Image (cartoon, rainbow, N blue to C red):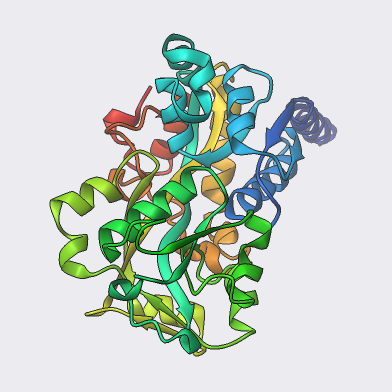
Length: 351
């Protein structure tokens, strides 16, 4: 009996020692502003990794994705998250990474590997009912909020307004650009008549906007959305064609919003991305981090009302934005965790 007790004490001690050893792994994680899907997802991982004794993760919010993804690729931090478009541009030595050059950019970009994908936001058109806008075909002569003064979001917004609305910025409508923290105010105070912008269902910006009056959100026109040209535009690196039942979006947004579509499907453009690590991370740590995420998917979806709309736990290439021109592959440890949990990892996304 005493021997059994000694063995039990020894086993308990070994368990605590093992957990303590794992918890001694210190990792750094950079993400964007608090309250955003990437920040909320990062916070969830920090808590889950700590509770499981996987690692102590030092999280730094409010950072610029362009900068911290380069830091991740250079091995200066351990984890980061953001849109797939940035690793794509890095591997091309283009856009914000033009100074790296194609050769250095391609080499660095290969260092970024994926733990798990999700949708960061959805591009759509919305406006106050009081503005009297009838939809995508009524943007000419309007003041349209396109996003910040520069960056991928603004380029996407203008491209969508031109394709689905037939209007070109600076020529057919006045393009309004403000920093992200001023976007809500620009809509409320009438600086912009409408926004072609990323939304959440609903996020903090949408909640602040609706407090000032009833609003309408328009699905992208079905025939145009399903055309080959549109699919090419919508499914470029870092984005994907997004569909959901109108009833689902309406339920999420509430009765003060009117969701307009030709049928019972809402159509928009998703910004795709995920949580990344440097490929040098050891397989077991990457496995344990990914497993912590997979085991807590339902809890993550309940962190905020809009989190359940962001495709957590879905590895479908089109939904998640994987493969094709997207250069980001899963970390080997992440592949093991997903497959162990019964998910099929696309071969084209394996390292």
